[in-house]
Image (tube, rainbow, N blue to C red; front, side, top):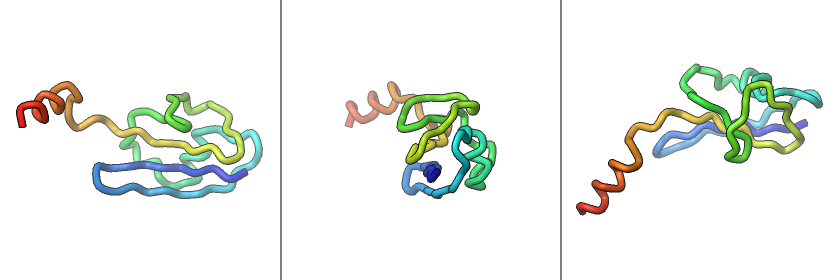
Length: 82
């Protein structure tokens, strides 16, 4: 089955398509993508947070979530001041 693995930064993103056997997990998809640099704090499939043991289905998109660089409330306050 084909799975897309994605990670993003503020100004660019990376996306890799991997071929996995049926019944593969999120952890296996990340390992196959070569993107497992330890920089992510969580993983999601189509925006829904999941565990590494989650079994994937054909066409799923695995998203590597990075830590926030700014508190969202503080960023909103700064934009409101402008």
